[in-house]
Amino acid sequence: TASAVSGLTGILNAFSAQNVTATQAADAMFVAAADGATTIEELASSLGMVAPIAANVGLSLDEMTAAVAVLTTQGIKTSVAAEYLRSALTNVIKPSDQARGVAKELGIAFNAEALAAKGLATFLRDVAINSGATKDQLGRLFGDVGGLTAVMALATGNAEKLSTSLDHMRDKAGATERAFGIMSESLSQQVTRREALTDAASVALGEADAGI
Image 1: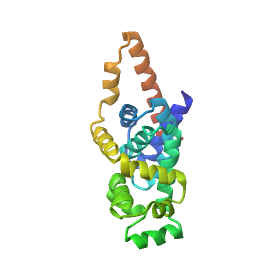
Image 2: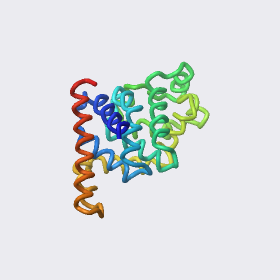
Image 3: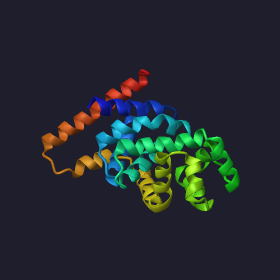
């Protein structure tokens, strides 16, 4: 659909500095759909809202996509999951004075540099678990319900899910092809679906190269 193609274009534009290709983006979304409670179209339509800030803070495509996938397993809609992750990242990039004060109390590095250096999973674990922060302190760090929900979901009860999904992402190459290979469809249906995905990826990649 148009929204999916537009979303894929946004992802490619956001991660252009990391040389992410349309194939890599499609593979990541197939892995996320398998690990989460979401679909390829929902991911393609939703990830664009968090991709620019995720790439800016140094997250990889895999980290961003896996995090959103894990959030959807908690009954959170894909678009809302992307919004929550964006909110959490925004609060790290631009912490409030209150958040800076709490970080000083806890003795933790709460900034974009620490997130980029540690990676998402380790950063969240250090902030939410290893720091000994209370829920009230975490609320003051992340400032809003959406961001706090994302952090609590990813750093506590679902930390293992996030780790597992990140492992799957490392082996994502060819996920799109494997997904097509196991679909119980007729040959003509497979060809049609494959051509549709290829066309969407080609359009998105062309638009990204053109700077659209």
